[in-house]
Image 1 (cartoon, rainbow, N blue to C red):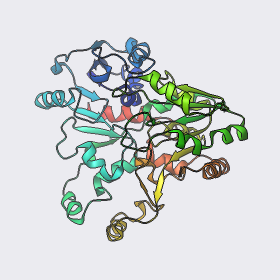
Image 2 (cartoon, rainbow, N blue to C red):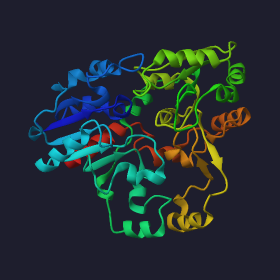
Image 3 (cartoon, rainbow, N blue to C red):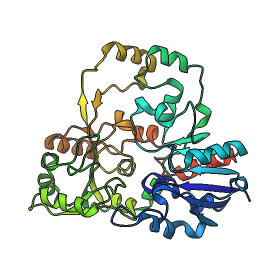
Length: 390
């Protein structure tokens, strides 16, 4: 039986593919190397150690869990849980390259599609030979180049065809959401950065929560509000985050704050509506057909009309036509063509919720954004990509 080494570095990135381990182990011997935030060298920075959740879910399916790099020449393929050259990934890739062992990276997360090529480091491939991306939109950019490339960059890129190295992998962990019934228990708010810390994006502070109209939503729909916040290695003080929110939220609001959740598919399935910063997480609720609002701030006038015109000629119908969005509560990324992107305004949020209830699941968006997302079969899609390379 052939052997696969899975390199686990960051839980909230890697969890999207960890769920393939049980099926993967039916065909291959699987070992796991834990480094970075998954190593035992750091104290967990949230309120529930997700490394232990990993062990609980997957240890029975793997032969070995390593914390030091094993001999690589015993493996037929190495699978990274990220696409970035950190946490030892670059060094392992270089050794695997010298041994002729193929390495598959995995798309880090939702990111601006104008920068997808440099983000995934296609030209020097410092930590992978092949990379799985969520859906067709990302793969197209490897053939056509980013929206904001100059004509010269675009023409130079035409001779570099990396399309065979960009693999459609979907988001395997989202498959399980198809097994759950919707219960409509709560209104779910998915936060990126809170207002009690520095951040590269707009922060969720008291002004933002007031404009969200949570009290109005609660009175209208008679649902509890659940606020999901991220645990972060660069801000390892979860109780400060809980305390901050308890100070700024209305005393009249019936709410709960959560951080590290063992089963986020169940959390989504229990949601009546979802309001989120742009991230991979709300793709779950979109796949489930739950009304999902993505917070963004639109710019109707493109900064450089001439470049936009050239891009329109170059990309045709694939160019975003609903306006460009400036940096908001996260990178808009793959949501550029999602109809549920709404500026922070209570009435617009209400209106979009109603539109989605009337129109139903965003099938076209899902088909182009998450391979296997309609039928919840991304695990099969991902395993097919592995079989083709090993």
